[in-house]
Image 1 (cartoon, rainbow, N blue to C red):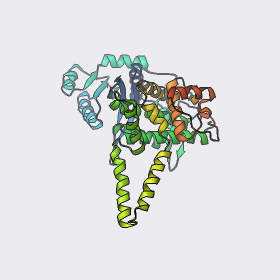
Image 2 (image 1 turned 30 degrees about the vertical axis):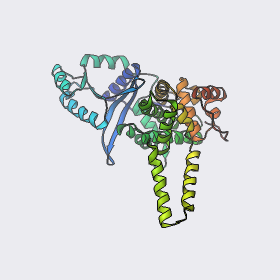
Image 3 (image 1 turned 135 degrees about the horizontal axis):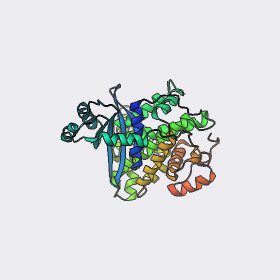
Image 4 (image 1 turned 30 degrees about the horizontal axis):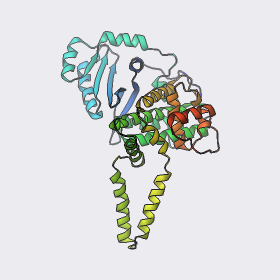
Length: 371
């Protein structure tokens, strides 16, 4: 399916696209239109979510509220975005309005909210508006709406993927992104003869995998590799990093079975053995080893930025055509997790390079070709 400009971008959307490009040019990973939901209700959305890797053990998340209007109600927006910052636990809140006046700065400063001045705002919009090689959010969302996935469409599914960001990056979120990236990559194999909207969605989920792993990895940025491996193994297997928690679940099941079903303990032993076997078969080892590598955070961020760019590229590239080695590495890891052969996804020559870069073995050979 070819991408066409079939969805009009309004003035506000054009400003958001321009500021997204501006923050990307500073080396940040940027997403636009992050939905915020609570108790099943749509609350609002975040115009821009800006993720910056400031050092090996520190990350910075900013949210940006954008109004491309002469009368942007900057005072009200400052109060609103400060509350949103608190709800999302972001490190910084920024408002960008064409109508920002001098009186807004003192008020926003009391709230610890930064303001992009009108002149800077206009200069950014003028400089970065109208990127010809990139689709807008509106255009990609329209492509996703046309793809049925289960009982809904791909746009609905991707909104559920992005809403995890507003709840804070955690291992449950990372596991969700890994699963969705793998499922979408397999779906692309089945349904797309050439890269299309499903491939775009797989790239976006894979980008979030990179961001999630980088963010969570900062907790053990100065730890031994073995400690980092155990940290990621527990998180990817059980959604939490407390090793005692998984053991307590098994112990509880064993106690219940022994007390109410089989006092001999034989059934409890089979439960433990079955649990351990199931854990061993879960395909997370490649992810664990790569995420635990020293100084891997820079690679993860570069890969995420490259995959996000591929998602919104006017002509979506084949995985073998991704311009970033780091992006190909993440796709290779997702392919392994999905049970797809790397050489079918990335090509034989790229497979060898990715295996050496990731430091992990490729998945066993399986039938089927990607795209």
